[in-house]
Length: 132
Ligand code: ZN
Image (tube, rainbow, N blue to C red; front, side, top):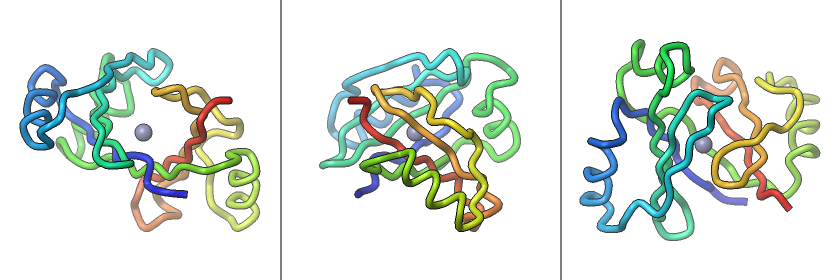
């Protein structure tokens, strides 16, 4: 439906939140820990989209690995979908590799599913749907 948010991996939210508040001229409106993913997140509104900053909370968090390998930067792009299960089925049938077989709980009251970047030109894609 739209680009719901861009995920940006950072080393420290305490440094990056004030930086993005200055950059975007808008306050961070929410921080949230997603323990199952080993991340702390911080959200900013940009028009009808968002920026999600991601900081690792553990050394084996996917974000810690990403930052260790590639440094800070754009980590994923999230597309909002109406029906995540239908979209997962559609993409799986087309041969895209889903990183989780069932929608899982993400930050910001969403159900999410990630697609393996090797099938999407190196871009980690997140599907997200509002929980109803
Ligand atoms: Zn995300």
